[in-house]
Amino acid sequence: MISYGPFYKTLYEKNITEYQLIFKEGISANTLHRMKKGLPITTKTLDTLCFILDCEVSDIIEHDKTQ
Image (tube, rainbow, N blue to C red):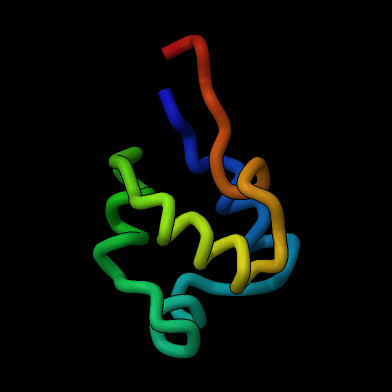
């Protein structure tokens, strides 16, 4: 199962809030809601988040084999 745990750690380390992603960067609130619920997002969205956060894909998602 894909986990977005690293995403929240990356946000914390870069001192960026979800509010900033929504209102300053244009990420939809629905996308962040889907991530909180562990639902899929598009690779385009993943690419956009990597660009905004200046990070790698592994800083946003990880594969959790225990679930």
